[in-house]
Structures are given as structure tokens and as C-alpha cells.
Image 1 (cartoon, helix red, strand yellow):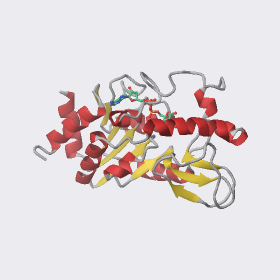
Image 2: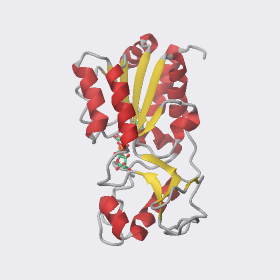
Image 3: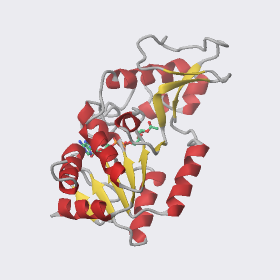
Image 4: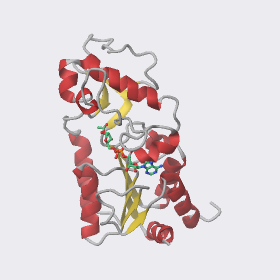
Length: 252
Ligand code: OAD
């Protein structure tokens, strides 16, 4: 069975890269971006814009209040959510490995919360707020106290969440860490709960597969990498990762 193969691959690996997306946080009650119940399902916003336009760097420059409105909406959808057994299982598998990295597109901070130490949150973290002008930054547990379009307490410039908006560049230092770790290589690459739309998310899987490195995909739906991976688990993240963990650490 595929889950046996996936477990055997992870049990014998000394290093692993986990690439995660919204599906990993689905069991926490956080809506995914796409698919059933996804945040982007209702195409147009109140302003008649596509959600991707409202959440773009360009819109934030011109009309930060519009971008903030939808950032608040995303934060409200996540508020009160807790990390789940999938984040915990990844952190637990990580402890068995000599080297492990998590490349996540999620902005909820749950991998670090679960104890994963090497996390590249390539799209940022919703809980970090930065000033657009001065070095001010703050950690906010939730946005309940934030104004609709909050301003810096130090210099009064508009604040922004430390997340990558549509059309913005990825943070260079994170891209560099990813490049460095990919160059070192991994014994296994595992993609979980992502629709695999972006090249920096698919490439590590496809390049590993191309060089004969074992790859695993956990996703109930098919994606662009599904036919390339060595093992495909068409399951939910919690179910698959708990199944793998119970095989690697029986009674653990
Ligand atoms: P998506 O919403 O695009 O995709 C979620 C994926 O998770 C889909 O492929 C689902 O089939 C799968 N899925 C749903 N429930 C699952 C479960 N319980 N277990 C496992 N998989 C499940 O989310 P991402 O791929 O993360 O960017 O989206 C990537 C980026 O698009 C996000 O980071 C965000 C968005 O634009 C930014 O905010 C910059």
C-alpha cells in the first residue's frame, strides 16, 4: 500500500523537505484559498475587483485600505484556530531526521508553533506587522485591536502585514535559504496540501523526481505534480501523516 511505501521512505531517510500549503491547516478550520469552501471562491469583491487584485502589492500602494479590508477578512477566518495533528506529526517526524526543512506557503505560523525549527515561510506570517516606512515591527496574536487600515505608532505611516501580496517579489533572504538547502539535496521530498501552482513550490518536487530522489504527495485532489511523484496519497493531511507516524513510531 502507498502509505507503507511512504512510511518506509521517511523511516530510512536522513533528510527531508516538507512543502506545505493550505490543506495542512484545513483540519484547523482555516479555509483553503481554492477549491470547495476556498477563500477565493466568490470571484469578485465588494469593490468589483478580483480578490487577487485587492490583495496585490499594487493595490496596497494605491489604496491600502482596500487591501487591508481583505487581509482583515483572511485573519478573521483564521482567528482562534489552533495547529492540528498534521503540523504536530511533521514536527515529530522532523525530530527523527538529521536534517529537515519545512517550506510553507501558509501564513498562520503553525509549523513553528508545532515545534518545527527550520521553517521557510515563503509567503510570510500574518501575525507579524511591519511599518512601510520605519523599522517598527510587532507581533500580533490577532487583529481585533487593529484599525481597519492601521498606522505606525512610531511614525504614522501605513502598516502592513509581513505577507507577500500578489505581484510582489518573494523575500530574497528566504529564497536564498531555500536555494542553499536545495543545493545540499534531500533524501525525500514531501508535498502536502498544496494546489502546487507556483514554480518555487513545484520545482523542488519535480527536480527531485527527475534526479531519482523519492517524492511523496499528500492531497485528496490531483495537482500538477501528481503524475511525477513516486508515492501519491490521495488522503487528508492528518489521516496520512498520523498513518505514517504510527508506522514509523509504533506505540509512539
Ligand atoms: P490552495 O487553496 O490553492 O490549495 C489547497 C490544496 O489543499 C488543494 O490542492 C486541496 O486539494 C488540498 N486540500 C484540501 N484539504 C486538504 C486536507 N485536509 N489535507 C490535504 N490536502 C488538502 O492553497 P495553497 O496551495 O497553499 O498565497 O495556495 C498557495 C498560495 O495561494 C497561498 O499561500 C496564497 C494563495 O494565493 C499568498 O497568500 C501569497
